[in-house]
Amino acid sequence: MISRRGLGRLLAGSALLGVAGAPLGAWAQSDGPAPNVFISPCGQPFRAAQHEPYPVAVWFKRADKNGDGKLDRTEFIADAEAFFKELDINGDGVLESREISHYERGIAPEILGYRYQSSSITGLYGGSIWRTQMMGGGGGPMTGDGPTDIVPGGYQPPDPRPPHDIDESMQGAAPYGFFAEPEPVMAADENLNGRIKKDAFLRLAGRHFDRLDADEVGYLTLDKLPRTEIQKRVEREQRRRGRS
Image (cartoon, rainbow, N blue to C red; front, side, top):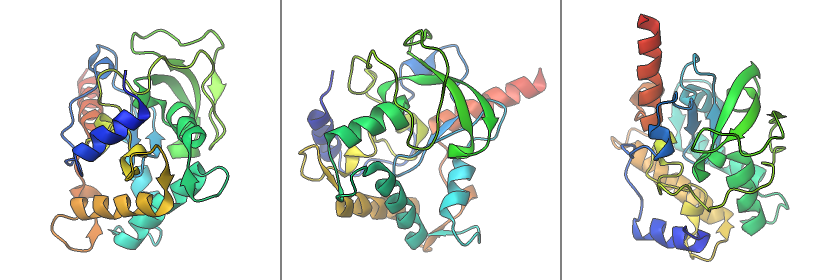
């Protein structure tokens, strides 16, 4: 088991981690279908049904405010700032333990090694509102409470709480995103004290943009973004189903 502070030290020791290429978490290598989930550079999850396109395009369209197909640095950082505001429940400019726990357990539990057994019902949060049951790595439901509707910022996983701070595979969010960061919000913990300040969160966003804009053209396009490991598996499974 790794503590949140230990995770911060792990991330700091790795500096700014590489783009994509992260191995799948242990449970994600199971025989079941890969979860069609993208976790944005700032840590926001976007989910789609198994037959739908990988939802990186949903994130890109939302972040590309002027709709020109080019995500520039200003738009990229503004996207991170908007998500920070959503996470900062009390509006004090700092993410504390309770707010981080809400993120890890209520917004992006995939980073804890859990997945959703889902069916899309209508488009809204991350491309869809989902009727879900939390599922553990072994494929069984966490509780017998039945499906729960997710709405923006409004879902808390039922007790019992997951018995660990991130998934034991140590991959966390990495298979779903561009960077090998197990916990993308805690990656901004510059002081390794379990508290995330807004300016540190935005500095990390700036470094992320620089890594993705390797050619220094000043903007990102959807077709030039790296493919996440989950995206590769989802698209491979979709091609297989299309041939069957």
